[in-house]
Each structure stands twice: as structure tokens, then as C-alpha cells.
Length: 148
Length: 148
Length: 111
Length: 111
Ligand SMILES: Nc1ncnc2c1ncn2[C@@H]1O[C@H](COP(=O)(O)OP(=O)(O)O)[C@@H](O)[C@H]1O
Ligand SMILES: Nc1ncnc2c1ncn2[C@@H]1O[C@H](COP(=O)(O)OP(=O)(O)O)[C@@H](O)[C@H]1O
Image (cartoon, rainbow over all chains, first blue to last red; front, side, top):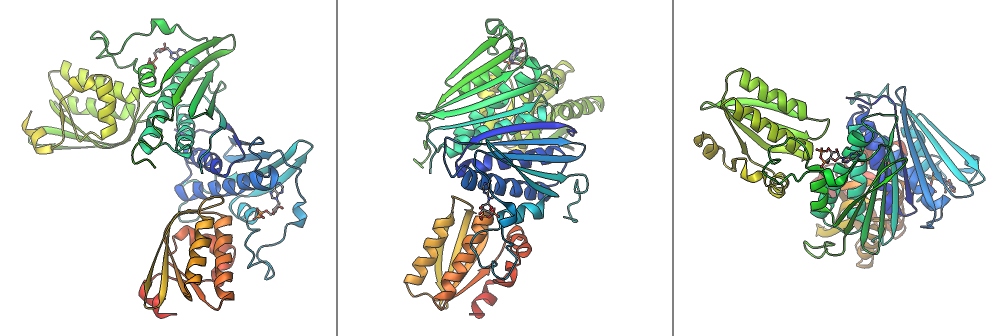
């Protein structure tokens, strides 16, 4: 039985060990939606990166601050929101990890991975925090396996 | 690194396939708290039964109705709340699955399993729904196996 | 859940693989039992080593299967219980209801 | 993450087991590399078949380790990458930076 419309929300405090809680929710929802293991894995990976950034850069590891994630599955699309309580940043200033100047850097690949694994990655900056929005069309991956 | 105080909330819609989402959160939190696999498993099982009841008996499988779960880890105790939007029931009317009259029944063992695996199981009935409260003292199980 | 069946010495060995939990696997188990009874098989052995998850609904299905088979004059026994399934049967005292085997040959001989 | 090391033909084979993710495993990897360099080991081979999870932080740690070792005149190569790790190195074009081997004997010969 596949769920066509579904919405799951989870709130964690800002600890790295909680990243996996959000990641497994993402992976399970993808599996429930009929996605294969690989497809689910890469979406889980994008979520992991988004939550890690929310904890580290957004909430600066302040355990009193929360990370809220919402997964909405509708019309074959998975809409993921990850919100932190931080001041935000300028995405235009994020450097390209593929440029020869950056390739040997020890950081700066998180958003790049998100963009690689998701169809759409965007940020919304509000007075009370930062919201990462990621969208994935599951339809063109459902059960692909070899095409992914 | 162990988390001493932690709070995670999750909201799902009333579908059986979402039970596992809440269960894995419970299990992961227990593992993060240092519980061994077996200890985590049985707590996950109690959560599974609680969420199944919330979906089936509380929300009567109405997918528009939500099940909310909150896990709070504090002072070595895990406090679990599972809330549904249903009218509640009279726990005193729940029959004992061990009685010879009931042993061959095909249902009626969920709350019994919760009580077996948790230290404390209780219900609160409110105008807007039912809340199941389960508490487990992790201290007397943390690292039982090999002290790790 | 996946169900596969084979006949050995007049015993139908029904192997269960995966989850027997609320909304998943419960109907497959029931169908497998009914199929066997329809074919006039009387001696059923549920091989459960592949069961990855079982909840109170799944336990209820096992009990229901037992009753169905017994009422038709058949026998239902269990083989290769994962330790956690044994625990679930134990705390509900159902372990005294089911005949449980760890060894297939012994189980077959017992019918 | 668990790290274990053994020396074969002048090459230090460092086996990584578990997660190399933010807040988990990153410092162990760094320590293992520094330990090896401190003992004047120059040829390091990271055996990665046991890596169960890797994120952008873990990738960053690998890159940092590579730079540390190279700056001290040593060599760091990778052995037995799980397919998903290969994918992560590929999309970031780091696969061109690392020398990667599927076969231990070949990897050892290459130093
Ligand atoms: N939620 C966030 N809040 C504030 N800044 C962020 C957030 N997410 C990303 N950033 C900024 O974008 C940069 C690039 O992020 P990323 O590509 O994930 O690489 P890394 O986290 O390794 O620096 C970060 O260094 C940080 O400055
Ligand atoms: N959240 C709930 N809302 C309403 N009724 C409930 C709820 N949880 C349990 N019940 C009642 O308690 C009974 C016993 O529950 P349980 O022991 O889990 O067994 P089962 O679910 O198999 O009937 C249920 O049949 C139901 O009537």
C-alpha cells in the first residue's frame, strides 16, 4: 500500500546525534512511497546535510535551539522543509566546491550535495530563522534502480 | 557522546505504515542514550503498540487525523507521550489477556505488551483527544549487556 | 511479508519472511493458512526464522490461525522462532498453547 | 568509528569501520593519520570497505587527511571504496584527486 499524500513533522534539539533521526524519517517515507533503497538513500543524505547545517551554522550547536523538519508527500513530489533559529546567510556567497581553488578544501560541499540529490533547493530567511526547502520528484525515480 | 536531556517530537497522519517512523525515532533515541539493542527494541515495540492503538482505536484510521508523539529523555528516564484525536476509552474495561477466557483471543495484547516493556503506562483523556504516557527508567538497563 | 510453502512427509511447511504487523503481512498469513486448508492439508508447520518484525496484531494472527486450523481438525505447529518472537509468546503465556520446534526433522516426526 | 592499522611491505593499512560523519568518526580518522605520521610512516592506505556512512564532513576529513599526509611528503591512497562513497567522491570531482584501488596487492605495489 502506497501513501499518496502524507505529512510528517519532527522537531529535534541541536545535537549532531539527532541528525540520524530526521534522516531515517526521510528514508522511511521514501520507502513507503515506493522509492527503491538507493533513491531513498540519496534523499536521506540531502536531509542529513540540511539538518547538519541547521544545527551547526544555524543554531550554532545551541542545544536549547530546535531544528524543525517537515516532510510532505503529495502528487508524487516530496517537499522537505528544515528550519533552524539562526540568522541565515547569503547563498550567493557560497563558493563552488568544484572550482580548482576549492577542491582541496575540507568543507563547503553540503549544499552542493543537496543540489545534486534533490531537484530543487532553496532558502527562505525569516526574522525567526532560516528555512531550507528541498523538493524531489519521486515519480521519475520510483523503482528505477539502474537509472539512479 | 551521550545525550542526557533531549526532546524529540514527531507528528504523523493515521496510517499504519507510519508506525515505523515513530518506532525508529524511539529506538534511535534509546541508542543515543546508550541503551543496548535489545533494550531499545522493546521500547520501540511498546511505542509501536501505542501508535497502532492511536491510529486504529483513537483516530479510527482517518488519515486527516494526526498522531503526535513526544520523547523526552531527562535524568536517565525516557518519557513518551502519544496523542490521538479520539474520544478515549475506559482502561478499567480492558480485559486481561492472560486470563484463560482471553488467551485464545486474536486481539487485546497491545496495552499488556506496553506494560511489560515499560515501567509506567498511563492515559490522560482530554476534550481534544487521548494521551498515552509511558515512562522507562533507562538507568537500570543502560549498557547492561557488556557495560558499554 | 513473503510466504512460501512446500510439502514434506505429509506436512505443509509454510515459511514466513518479513513483517507480520498491523496492516502488513496479517492478511497474507491468513490466506496462506486458508489455501492450505482448502487443499485439505491438515498438518501445518509455520517456519518463522525469516520473521523480522511481529507485533500484537501479528501475535493475534498466529492465535487466529491456530484456532482456524484446530477447528478443522488440523494441527498447526511452529518452527525456528526468532528469540524475540519466543519472548512475545512467553510473556503472553501463549508459549504453552503452541507446540514449538527448533529442529525441522523433529517437528515433522511429531505430526 | 573503529580504526585498526597494520603494516604490510612498508605500507600502513588503516582500516576504517563505521560512520565518518559530522560529530562521529571525524576526529578518530584525524588521530589515526597523525599517529601514523608521528611514527614516520609515509605510505598510508585507507581501507574503507567497512565505512557504513559518510557525509560532506567525512569527505572533508578525507581531503584534509590527504593534504596533511602529502604536505609531510607521504602518500595517502584509498582501498575498497563502497559504491556510495565512490559516488560522493565522483560528483565532487575528488575522485581525480585520490588514487583509488579495488585490490590490496595492487595498491601495495603502487607505493
Ligand atoms: N542553515 C544555515 N544557516 C546559516 N548558514 C548556513 C546554513 N546552511 C549553510 N550555511 C552557510 O553556507 C555555507 C556552505 O554550507 P555547506 O555547503 O553545507 O558547507 P559547510 O557546511 O561544509 O560549510 C556554510 O559554511 C554556512 O556559512
Ligand atoms: N488510543 C486509544 N483510543 C481509544 N481506545 C483505545 C486506545 N488504545 C486502546 N484502546 C482500547 O483498549 C483496547 C485494548 O487495547 P490493546 O490492549 O492494545 O488491544 P487491541 O488493540 O488488540 O484491542 C482496545 O481494543 C480499545 O478498545
